Amino acid sequence: MRRITGLSIVLLLVSLLPAQQNIPAHPDELQFRKLDYQPPKRTEYRHELKNGVIVYLAEDHSLPLVNVEMRIRTGSYLDPEGKRGLLNMMANQMRAGGIKGMSAEEFDEELAFLAANISSSIGNFSSTGTASANFLAKDTEKVMELFFEMLRFPRFEQERIDLFKSQVLQNLERRNDRTSSIMSREWDRLMRGDGFWTTKQVTRASIESITRENLIAQHEKYYRPSNFMFAISGDFDSEKMMKLLEKYLSDWPDNGEKVPEVPKPDFVPQPGVYMVNKEDVNQGRVRLGHLGLKRGHPDEFAINLMNDILGGSGFTSRIVSRVRSDEGLAYSAWSRFAFSVYYEGVFSAGFQSKSPSCAQAADIIIEEIKRIQKEPVSEEELETSKNYAIEVLPRYFENARAIVNQFLSDEYTGRPMEYWDTYRENLRKVTLQDIQRVAQKYLHPDRLVILAVGNVNDILAGNPDKPEYSFKKLAGGAEIKMIPLPDPVTMIYPQ
Image: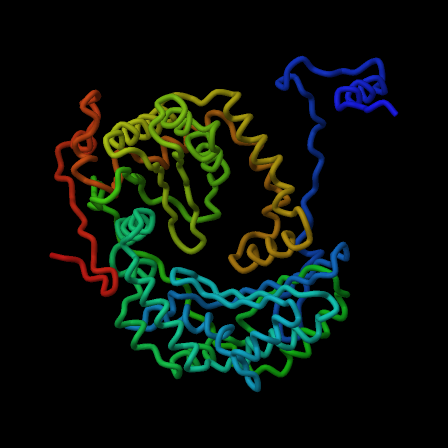
């Protein structure tokens, strides 16, 4: 038999194609059908238990798996004074420290035998608690029993608590190792001040002060049905799942005491140039910005599109085009206009670049902020941004798990029921004039906080071939303020 080559196969396939093919000469000429997609309705997935607990259910029988996601109305903002890290430790040890009638090691072994994953967490800067489970559908009743035993009767073994404490203390010692973590910490201090809950740091003293009794007390205080919400997806019957949830939640005592609201900051950022010296790096991280807005603002859609054009859309955005593509100053550059759920978010832009070129890249970003205020964006830029935002809508609901998790997040944070129904309409009605209007109204280049982390001497020296760019000029004659690195374990800053 004569050997058939790859070229022969290609020629054969081509010969089988119809004679008339409308193949465009260039990818730019490709035509696509208009997206016809209707987002799911929240009400179709929403259920309520007899005790008022909200549950989102989505059956998906394509794989014999079940996913349980849970939100608990709590968070690290509830850490008592002097015990920063308590809620994080409590949530971690709920999973790691065993359950009633089963040691930590036995609990681990049982879950491993079932090939099930169960987790519990509260981040150190989180305004919510989470718990989740992933398991085979055939083990639903057994794993759900273990899951609710963890939620209701955690064992909090002292040995596991001690191990967790030692791991945290080891991590604290490396807190000043990476410029990315330094940037995040110091930026938040510049935006929120030292006294806000998101800027209070875990220390050796706070970790060592936490006792097993503290963990038990915090668990009893916040882990009760009135603080729970669920999103469950996968291979199950909804009616049976609701009965299973009723079984584990109906007799759980609950005083209905309301959890304190997430605190709001009262700090006003001070514009200026700030620097943190880290001599052992040859690249600098720079971030600049100011306070933004709270989620649900009337101009939210216009602002999102404006920021997308400015620096939020990757390679097609202006900041990336200028800083990366045109000047080759940074691998990545970006802008973000964050809308916080509970209080004002932050507008910020940033990059990482070689130390001598940091001033030039920062200057370009400020130039682009001012340009989007002064000059109308093009029709093509706006349409590209709109089309992307509209056409990625199905990704938020791409499968059963995504659907119920999105609706769980929406309900927990108080997003309006009709948000996704009007999402595309709100995007489409944004005009070129709206983009310039919101840029002029909500971007404040005269109020920028500019923070650079890296080798300060090299950053300040700048590029000798381009002396027109410097942080001294960006400071406008004001003093550049130096932020010292704190002791990583005590978080005490040198005077």
